[in-house]
Length: 346
Length: 271
Image (cartoon, rainbow over all chains, first blue to last red; front, side):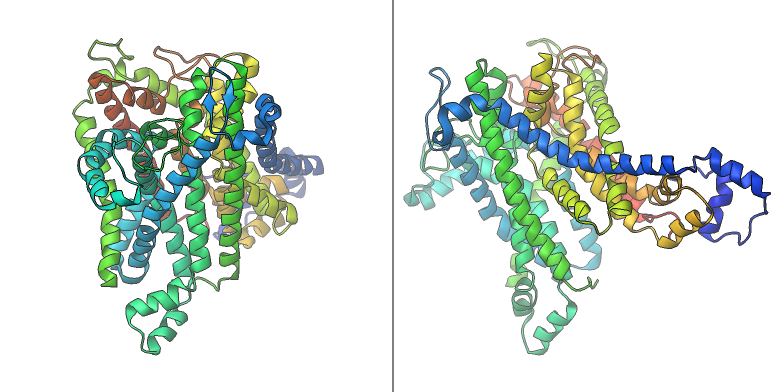
């Protein structure tokens, strides 16, 4: 996408920058002065522009502050009525205006944990494969594919999960899990296909690209001398990866996992479509459940009275605070790694 | 053994992607026809009908979002790269932008609901556009900053040495040099919000009819896919697949275009 070349007077100013013509045709001084003035050469224009830019930068704070104040003021009703009890109560009874967010907090935590348990080993495996053993030609294609995975909208994942993943789980995977892992109490019938486990699986697919691409980034930041040193000591390739690469990159990997967790906690549409939306806490992962984000998506439109709506907004506020803390943690870890790391060797 | 595990992991990761694409193309293309692009949704029970109003609605929402999000994002990026380099304030702004990037989109939706929809007593396209626009700001700001930092100092100095005013030098010289990269960032932000459903649920709300009025509820592709996917009718499921295919095609085209542009060099004058 090439931007049109500037026309005459401006071209004269821009050309020496590209180093094309050493000296432009000299123009009379008054003409230059006139030209500069016509182009807004004044301290007023400069400071106005500067403050405009600062204002836009500060608007990012403004947005965060605005979100926070709006959420707090709109959930005042339940904040005062239930207090901290809101987060420990497990009743969710809109008819009697009794609200507790525990089932949703439980659902969010458990579905994210299921996603992490599935996604983390796979993501690290992919990152190891891409950085340490993949042929160069394949690397480009694979990293493009994982990037593409990140570009698919949440609602499309949800659609695919409803019509492809859930039947697959119900027919093949879940019966197997019930048979082999039923004794743990985590996988017991009845099995509807939709439920906590389906949500965890689709979340895992969704957060994989983030974790693997960030892990890949911190792994390539490990200097080659580390690898060579470990290999020189007689280590095998696997030992080299474990001791030379993974150990050096561990803080960054933890950071990327936390970033993936932040995404999983707030993920809405795909989860709302397959989790079954039931405000209950059950040990079995095959039972329907609900997360903080999914309950907002599923119930907000039909929340008619103020207390109900306020309760849902308070859940949103809690989600906002939790994801901010998780993201800050992840960013601090990632920053610590990238700042302390030596120049990237490619 | 370890290599086999890593290869297995890669295959396991690529498998769902391939499956999703095959399903999308197979189920989507078979139900894609001209009606899809020209008709509005048919009433329950009737076959036919399309998502023309949703495609236009998505266009209106994304246009509004870009109008709000891109200028603010670019300006914030200019501040971060040019004025605030190395200052404490810029570090904090940068950090806040990163954190804002991680705020769940559903939270953005209810915040805008409380901010705009509740006081105005009605869902509106305007509210949807604002929600999406806010989500674009951090991405655009961060990529703009990164691209501006890559512009060599000599170019700025050359412009200033010729007596070009600072603001003019930033816009016409520095920003212009970094333009391909900045456009890439804008496209990425655009592709990201194009598929967002959660922030639109309680702001744009969706509409079964034609509407381009900013004060009225408006339909959007992701919203319509969501409604149709959860419906009990086969005809609507068919349309949901077709809608997903169109949405993905738009996003993939945007992302590939971006990759093509960036592979040809991020900066125009800096070689």
